[in-house]
Length: 159
Image (cartoon, rainbow, N blue to C red; front, top):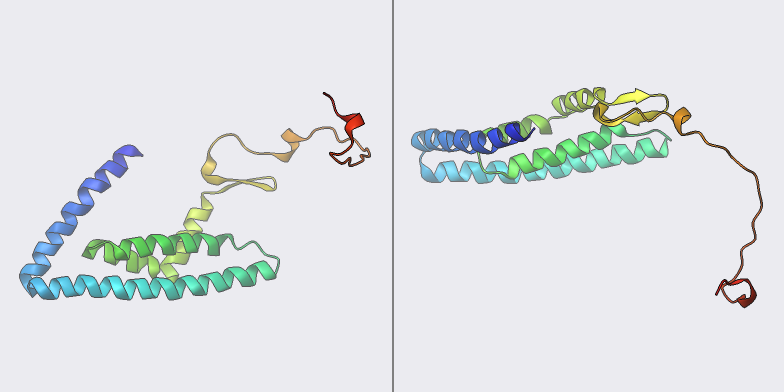
């Protein structure tokens, strides 16, 4: 995982600089800067509206007694899209706009959810560790009664 992150931290800025040079050479300095600022503002407003719509869908599913797992994951993807859109650059803006579109975002969320392994009734995220099976954690249950005592009862304290 570390080599992939290192590669991305090196490759993405190099690609973005190359795209800035190409677009700047074609459009000029100020139109290129304006285009980057416009995509950042438009992207931020789109992320806000899509995020509110996703939040409403989550609330509706919760009120219906359903688990809104896909919508929650889409909300996380919207946050990623927001970061990509606010990062200066044309490639990150394209990736952010792609994730921002409802169709590709839902498809990506479904693919990520397919990586969740379901064992019994308990979900194990991304296949890490041992399966969490309720049967393996089953213990003995004892029935009993208890009385709540106030802290003012001095005769029951161990001092």
